[in-house]
Image (cartoon, rainbow over all chains, first blue to last red; front, side):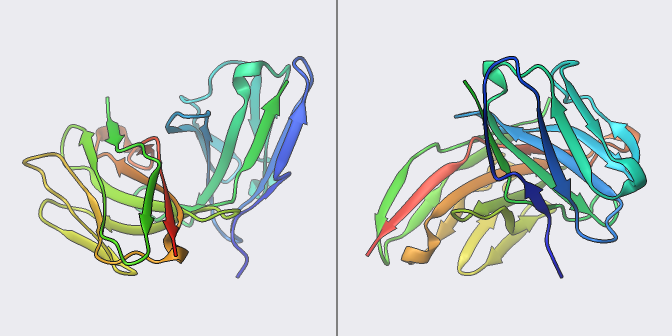
Length: 114
Length: 116
């Protein structure tokens, strides 16, 4: 069974540009999560989808970030316009159910904003 | 709010050395505690977990005991191998009302390098 996949693995963009990150969860997992690790800091929760609905986006840093999960399958996280402080590694995770279910993580997308 | 503090490293050991990575936490109630590992080029993998006080999680020779009195969950391994080289993250998942007990709170991660 395929694990969580993320694309691209690495993205380098200039300040002010737009970047879209993609996450494909494990097939059948209704719950999808985005986390971010800024250099030298903790991995922090960004948001949680159940199917196509945003359940919790309390961790989204500001309105330059937009996450979608149309059709309840893959998810995208768009940053527009990107700022220097957005650099970091963006992790996606999925779980079959929410709550206490184990979250399975993807390899992450490393975003560098110059 | 919840927080996790772990030894930042980097930690460099020789093969067969003893490993300890310290982790302490702050949380209300009775959180579940986890250690995740990220091998080079791969995603975070759950290494072990403990869901209540005095529980010991273990996997692949690694162990950690949930100590509520010291709010700690230190990771240990008696004899590390080169293949254990990775970044290790301590994390907790809280118990709270409102159903938001899915959020993981992580420490900053500890890079471990094991030399032959």
